[in-house]
Image 1: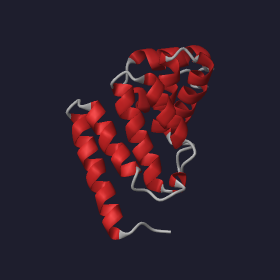
Image 2: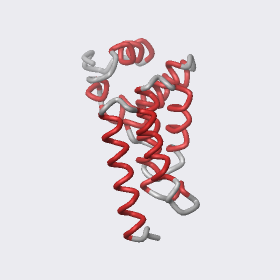
Image 3: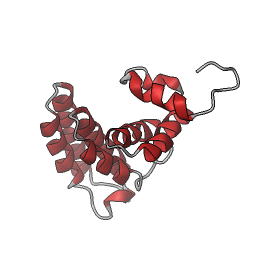
Length: 146
């Protein structure tokens, strides 16, 4: 199945508007745009690639605005969409959200998946506390160098 050209164009437009809002630090407005785009997807929404990146964008915006509960929900929902399992960024944000909510075991699992998928580079622009925490729960690499 494919989306009609008109629906696809509108989803892209709304997503770009959401991205612009997020880049400007207007996370609530960004989430509203992403949800508007998500609502255009036919059911079942989780069958669409667009659902994956829209939920990831919603989760990211919520994480950046410290709405960790909503970030966790969006990233958890994304895990039911195409290409989400194994996506280092989605695992990272889900792990960080779990960490902030005090769900440390779940955080450990997700942060480890992010690390296994993308290495320490995925943590480069993040608060160092997440990678520091991960290093306390993983066995160091054979080289001894993280």
